[in-house]
Length: 439
Ligand code: GDP
Ligand code: MG
Image 1 (tube, rainbow, N blue to C red):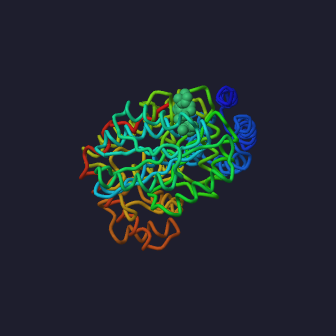
Image 2 (cartoon, protein in one colour; image 1 turned 45 degrees about the vertical axis):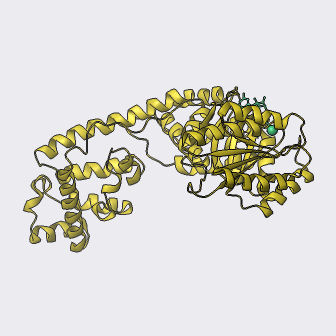
Image 3 (tube, protein in one colour; image 1 turned 120 degrees about the vertical axis):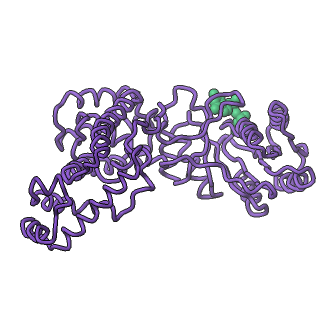
């Protein structure tokens, strides 16, 4: 399987002390093959590998990670990005308006089941859903929705199998208005394959009813087919969100990955079983771990990240307590920033920092070399006791670093601001961990 393959690749990488360009290439070649074998779309794989390669080659390996772990980290992050970097919610109108959701997909994808699953979630949120039987072709479809609706204790609207779906949908919305339902979910018919009748029927509903959103339901077990289905529905009807069902089996996440990448539309939920409670919010990072099959490795990486974070944090906190944050610390910050692949990733490791830091407190990452030069041009005394830096010393430092005095001024100012901010937040470096990653 993909997971086994990737684990093997990274086992090999992990044994090595240093990551070369060749290592990255070799590993990515295997990643590529593995993803393709897992039924991930060819174009998606190609773009993905290119992106990871660009990021990985030439990047410093974090102190506490092995080169192999570093590659895993990048692969995982990019995979997460590819699947949408955050969770997306079903779009719901305010309670005094009627949200209309059209479920669509091939026969057997899980529309009817998922419709009932969603109804349960909405009900728990205090919404008043109405399920609508628009599948007039499969004999048992209406009955199936009724049974599911009953299980969820939500009303089901149907008009038998003699009306066209558009008329049923229109009548259902009227019914909802009268009965104080504020979410209408249309369970439409599927065919075994994408065909024109099905599409026309959906287009007719789309063009004549004000839909809040269209949701495509796809079966993860159908692999590449699911990708083609998603592409076609998106082109012909337009999809706002996707639900991938049957991820409870041993299906690889390949389809989910490709669908998101190809359509650009978010995955809202994943179906994790036949029970009506088996619908989970989609978490891109968890899916990435699942595809990689390396939850354990990832949590190891996370621990490593936290341990440097916390070692340094403790040290820093002690200095702060003594109000001794110096240019040497600042310099250390700079090198940490470089090691960790940028300012944003450093900041993201520091609990509670995010919004409190603004751009002018910290230098432009491209200026790091210059800043180092300035700090190295300071005497030991100046570095540990910045208060002694007067104008004439600034003059000398600027000369030594080969920069303009205004740049020295700017750095001193940034340093003062950083120091002030840190003093004002004594709990800043506290031991709270980063958010947990699922697996
Ligand atoms: P529809 O034709 O698209 O309406 O599909 P159905 O809702 O009738 O589902 C088809 C079959 O898939 C049923 O047997 C469902 O119980 C099953 N099913 C739906 N979602 C899931 C899921 O997430 N996991 C599993 N294991 N089965 C599912
Ligand atoms: Mg159905």
